[in-house]
Every structure is written in structure tokens, then in C-alpha cells.
Image 1 (cartoon, rainbow, N blue to C red):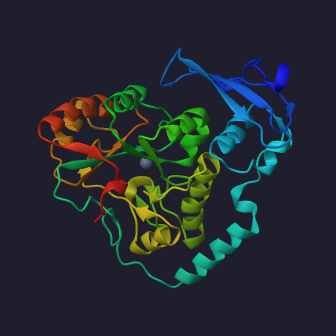
Image 2 (image 1 turned 120 degrees about the vertical axis):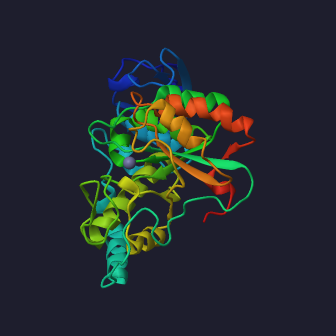
Image 3 (image 1 turned 180 degrees about the vertical axis):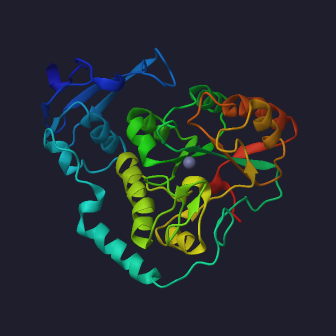
Length: 334
Ligand SMILES: [Zn+2]
């Protein structure tokens, strides 16, 4: 096509479509069609096109379009791997810089013995430091075998109502929903945060919570936090600033390690859905207990649960009580 503008041709899995193994020259434009007809889509049947300007010679493969276009949109230098058809980007943990970071953190904290274990250990932030009638909504996407879904009705509701939320996303959920993840990351209402690589409780010695074995040592803890941070950074161009472990359990040394890796550790003051086990009525009742500065924890990955309906019922009632919804970054945390 003239000027190197290629229409979308063919389709690949999960609803994306794009050119296959096409050599693209710098300055060419690639027109990408996004179709939202895959399961869990936020906008089933809706489609839009966007134009990507190619920055340097690159062979674009179907699946790579996602990674490469995200990098271009984010204004990053195109990853080297985008230029080699058929090769995945190098794993984040393979480089010398990751190994030296991990070694440095492990040696700094080796020998420190934790004395606390729980959801509110020293360093965990559980509310906004304000007397204003504001609430920060946080939603986890845990990515367990039964937790890879998306509550599209809830997300659509938040978008429609302009309610900001911090989305704590586990690496396994990203892998199950790569296009949807990028769509959420592109929405300025949502702050993408780190919910770990394998959803383990954050421990320096393998303590468990709810029967889930925590990270067994400092090295595994660094992997759990940092590899998902790097994954999110690589995909979105933005490094997450907040971390919540799988199960939200920590020892206080693990909290210090997360801070060392550039994260503020976020707990909660309002248990919104108890791991997506509450009924709709219980979720609404829980949210109505919010006070100025509350951080609400709930889940965005269980559309079958009472969570979404309960939140949607609570929001107008909370607004009537004079509350508004804000971001974690809008106030100091405590
Ligand atoms: Zn979780």
C-alpha cells in the first residue's frame, strides 16, 4: 500500500489482528485494528484502529505487535527483540544488571531476622493520611488457575463513573490477558501496581498465609517483586510504584526489601470482598464502613463473585454520604 501504510490483514489469537512477519522500514506507518470480541473484553463488538509509526527497520510478527506497539506508544526505544522475527524478548532475569541488583539486595538484608508476620507489619501503608472524605479503591488481579478472569462490568462502571482505581496485577494474570492488560494500562483512570510474580506471601524465610507458602528466602523474594516490576515496566513503559504481596501478608524485612526495590507497600483498611468470597450485600456493607482516607481492597478478577455488584451498589451511597474516590498518589499514606 502507498507510503507503507498496511491495513490489518488476517487475525491471530485473542482478538488482535495484524500483519504477519512483515519487514517494516523507519517512518512507515502500521495501521492496527483492535477488535474486542474475545472473552472478557471490556467492549465486546467495539473496534478501533490506531496508527503506529515505525522508528527503525523491524520485522513485526503477530504476537510481537503487542509488545512492540506498546513500546512505541510509550515513546520507548523499540526493544531489540522486536527486530528479530520469531524470538521472544530476552527474559528480564537474564541480564547482568538484574543479577547484580539481586545480589546487592540479598547481601544487604542477609542475617536480618523478622519478628513480625501479618497484613499490618511495620512499613505497610493502610490508609490515606487525611480527614477529607476520600476513599482509594484498590483491585487485585491474582492470576491463580481460577482467578484469571476480568469483571468487565465493574471496570466499565468505573470508567463510566470516572472512578480511579489502583490495579494490583500479578504476572500470571498479565500472561493470561495481555491485550486487556495493555488496555487497562493505557487508561489514565487506572494505576497499574505490582501484585508479584507468582502471588506468594512476602517472607524472607518461607512463612505461609492461608496455606500458601511464602517466598522461601531473600533471593526468591527479590524475584517475586522485581521480576513482575520489570515485566510491567517493559510492557507499559512505566515502573510500578506500589506493591501488594499475594495474600497481603509480609514480614517487616520483606517490606523493607520491597521499599529498597522502589515500591511503597500497600495494605488496606477496608476488607471489601474477603478474597472475592463476600456476597454482593456483604461487599456493599463493607464499603459503607469506609471512613475518611480508607483504602479498600477488592478483586477485579472474579466476575462471578459478589464483588462487582456490591461495589456498584455502594458507590452511589458513598457519594451521597459525601465521599469521593481518589488515587493513592493524591495523599500522603500512613
Ligand atoms: Zn491476590
